[in-house]
Amino acid sequence: MHAKDAATQISRLRATGLMLRNCSVPFLAACAVAVAEAATGRHTTASVIAAVLFAAAAISVLRAGRRMRSWAYGKTPQICYWIALRPMPVTDKLAASMLG
Image 1 (tube, rainbow, N blue to C red):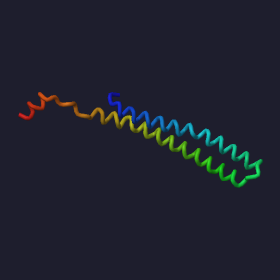
Image 2 (spheres, one colour; image 1 turned 120 degrees about the horizontal axis):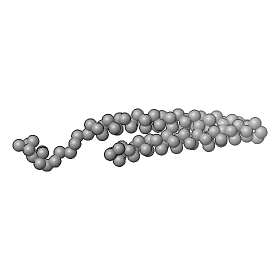
Image 3 (cartoon, rainbow, N blue to C red; image 1 turned 180 degrees about the horizontal axis):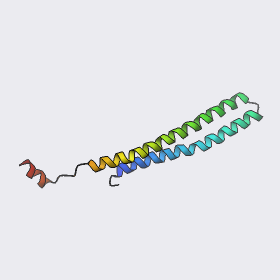
Image 4 (cartoon, rainbow, N blue to C red; image 1 turned 30 degrees about the horizontal axis):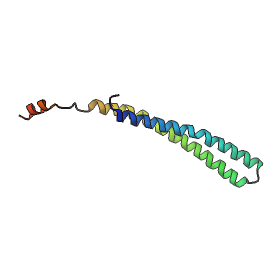
């Protein structure tokens, strides 16, 4: 790609999607710990609430990561299309001949 800003934007979307996807593993581990705490500990209500919230967070970051990845995949052809349609720079000599 010749446009560094466009490549940076696509890389940023892909990195964000990857980061969100990788955040799901700690949320699932925390959910498992909360379930184990609910089964064996004294604070059952708090543990069940924590397990539900951690499970919801894991699902949310997986969906958001998938959305960012699809945005990056959709953004690549869109940016390539607009780069190809960008007008070529006009030199001063050519502009002067066109203006008269």
